[in-house]
Image (cartoon, rainbow, N blue to C red; front, side, top):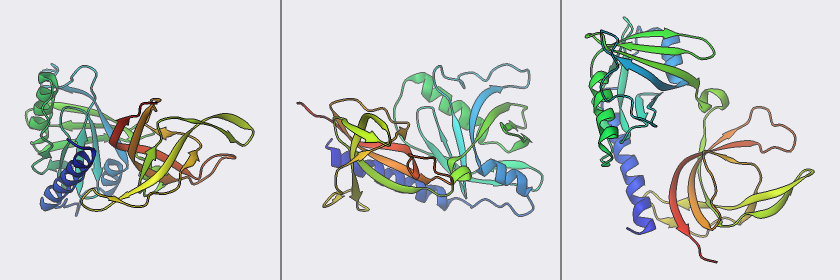
Length: 262
C-alpha cells in the first residue's frame, strides 16, 4: 500500500467513525448532574481494574502491557488501548446512570489477548452503568453494572481542559536533526515543515518552508534516518516560559513514515 493510500485510508476511516458515532442518539444530559458531566468531559479516564460481583478480576480484561483509556468529547465517547479504537454516543441520566450507544470500532486483527480485552470491555460498557465519581486532583470513576461488575478508572485532566481547543496541523519531520541554538542553549533540533492535505488525503502543494523546531513533540520519538509526517494537536500556552514556544505540540498520529538512505 502506498503512503498516500495509507493516509487516505486513515482519514476516510476517521470520517466514517465520526459519522457513525454522530448518527447515534446524542447524549441527553437534561437533568443530569452538571458537575459530573463536566468531570467526565474534562478528564482522560484510564482503566485500573475490572472485577465481578465476587471481586474476581474480569477474565481477559486487563491485557499485559496495554491500558484502556476513555474520553468523553461532547456527544461522543472514544476508547483506545486494546486492539481496536471504539467510538460511540453517550448519555447520563438524572439518576446518574451512564449509557453508551452501540460502539463502532476499527477492524484491525490483533493478537488474541488484545481482541479478548476489547470484547470483555465492550460487554460491560453495553450495560446501563451506575456512576460513582470521586473528585479531586486525581479523580476516580467507578462504573457499576446491574450484575455488580465494577470498572475502576483514574482521571487525568485533558489538554483541552488545561489549555483550550487544539489546532490540528501536519508537520513533516526531516530524517536528520540539525545543530541549533535556543536562547543560550545549543543542541540538536528537528527540522520540520508544514504540510496540508485535502479531504481525500491528497497533498496540497507547495509545502511550508523548512525550519528548525525548538522543543519537543509529546508522544513522538525521532529516529535518525526516518522521515515522518505527523498529525499534531497544537495547544496555546496560557503562560509562556522564557525561551519556550508559545505552543504545546502533541502527536496525534504518524501518517507517513519512510527510511531515507544516506
